[in-house]
Length: 368
Image (cartoon, rainbow, N blue to C red; front, side, top):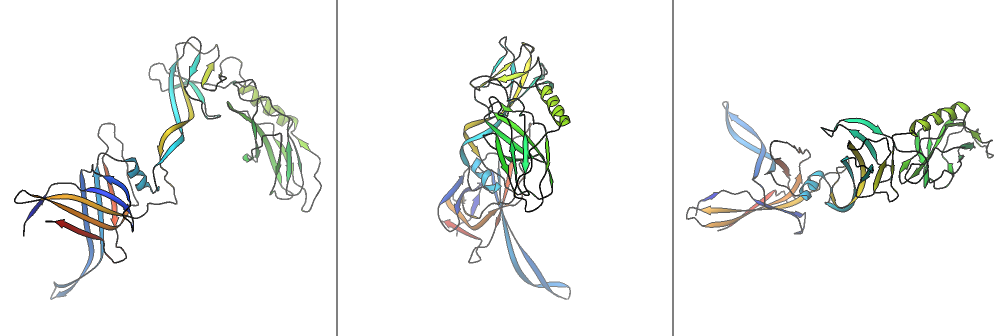
């Protein structure tokens, strides 16, 4: 019988359990380590261990690698697959303001996602001034504040109406500070209310540039249980209207502001913006060609089978094929992903080697 040496990390193929359908192939691992453990108890003879009983064998496969496949990370995270397609990406770009005070983002941001700051000209990081969005209701601006909000209520329902706002494409109705409706018109019927209970309503207007400040708050109390006729419509008090108008005027500054260009891909700053200064724009954009996976608190990695291939060499210098078939493998519950600015990221990925339906955990095969 020949004797062999091994100087290799296995190439790993993951397959769906009970099939030979491959899921992922890894040929870049630096180390593949297998550890087997079991519980052992002894009977002693005059204090010396004499008889041993073994049980509860467990196994662990560790893959050490400085390279990785995104699908491998998705597998460890418990996502079924790496999802490819269009997705939203949060971006930050810094621009040196040109004489026309126009910033071209190159893509249309997601509605309401744009924030603009003047930043330190040297480090391009520190926020110096936040630039408010123009609130005029004109094209490129967020809508003006919604007015004339009125609420009439029965016992468990309420009807909210308001005046149309220029350049608004939709509205959001808030009940007690929480969004409860998203109408495109100027009315909304709220339901599942509690009789004889106080509720506070506000409305916000939206368009592609963003959303307005909240309207004046309307406070209403629902009728007693069984009431079929709606009470008289209630509007905001004078104090509530004054407070809302103050908020709106604060957002509608004369002077320094930005607005979106007609096409939606650019930002126009006002004449008060400093030409040559650095401005940072934060925004969300829909991007094609995005690969993604999700870590979900209630979703965990599934079980696989693994075929681990390697080459062993005989004393005569002849290479032979070796394969380990791990029959029931589950990625470890705990995964750490370290990023280091000075060193290459090294992953240590662990897999529990479980027993299959025949209590087998691994099959070692060699072609001699």
